[in-house]
Length: 102
Image 1 (cartoon, rainbow, N blue to C red):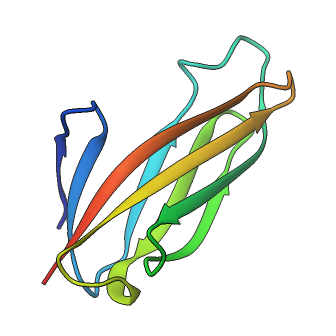
Image 2 (cartoon, one colour; image 1 turned 45 degrees about the horizontal axis):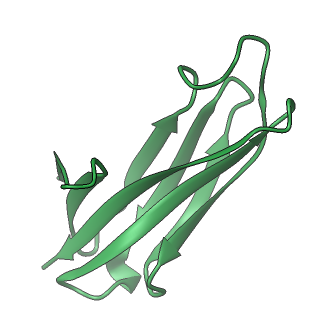
């Protein structure tokens, strides 16, 4: 089970146990203008080594990523970024921090 806190920069910070697979979701609906839709979205992770096993998005503005830290290093921190593009040519990104624990 993952627990979340907010770091000093206001970024959600999750502790996740190694060898687990959890969903991380960013809901963009409050940020998007009425009638705007997500046309594409992607997840990235730094540093390398954390397995982003898949991801999806809905045009309504929800972006979900499935993270499998079994490929990550125990007691290491990773920054995940959800970046979206909309039909009104807007771009935005949201950060999430994960610490893989043993």
